[in-house]
Length: 308
Ligand code: BDR
Ligand code: CA
Image (cartoon, rainbow, N blue to C red; front, side, top):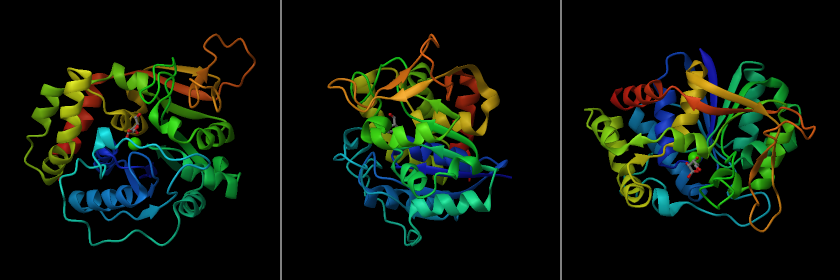
C-alpha cells in the first residue's frame, strides 16, 4: 500500500478528509502530524485522536507547532467552532499523542518510506517548514506533496487575496513551496468550483455508521453557518485535496505554473501569486488543480461516511 502522511489542523473538513484516507484500501495512513490552525494545538491534537477512535483506526498522532513561525496566530473558530469540532462536547480520547515532535516524525517517516511517502498538507505549513529547516534534503525523499492552500486568482477566504492556510503562516508556506521543486496545489477557488449541495450532504450523513453520525454532529454548526453565509453549497476544501491526493486520475484540468507566496503587502500578505502567462521567468513549481470529476469527489465522500 502507498504510505500517506497527513499534516493537518482538524477542523471539520480535515476530519472528512481523514475519513476518506482511512477508507482507501490502496493507501496506508502512517501518521498524522498536527499543527495549530483552525483552532489551537491542544484542540487540533485532541480532535485528531478522537477522530481516530471514532473511525476505529490506530494511527500515531504527533503534536507539532503551536503557532506560526513569526506572527501571531489567526483562527477559524467562527467556521469550525471554538474546539474546531463544532462544540458538541464529545468525550475526549483516552489515547495520547506520541512524544516525538511532528517535524521530527515527518523526517523519520521520510527516511523509513524514502521515495514512496506521499505527503498531504491540510493546514498551515508550519510543521513542514520546521522539518525543512532541520533537514533541507527532505523533498528528495517525498514521492508527492499535495497542499490544500492558496487562492490562485486572488479570491481568498481569509482576506480578499489570501486563503486561510497560507494566510495563517505565509513564511512557512514560502519556505515549503520554495524548497519543493514540484508540488500539487488544491486551492480555495477549486474548492468553490466543487461545492457540495447541502441537501446532498444531508443524505450522506444519514448513513447508519459511527463515522457518519459523528461527522453529522461535528459538522452541524459549520453547515448552518455555511447556509447563512454562503448559500446552497458547502465548501470542503480539505476533502477535495484528499480526493486529488488519493485519486489523481479524477483531475480533469490541471495547470503547471510558477507560484510564489506574497510575504508583504497591506492587502496581499499570504496571497499565492501565479505567473499565468508564464512570462516572468519563474520555474513551473506548482501543478494547480483547476477541475476534478465532481461525481468521483462526491462518491469518495459518500463511501467514507458510510464505512465502518
Ligand atoms: C482551509 O482552511 C481551513 O479552515 C480548512 O480546514 C481548510 O484547510 C480552507 O481555507
Ligand atoms: Ca485544514
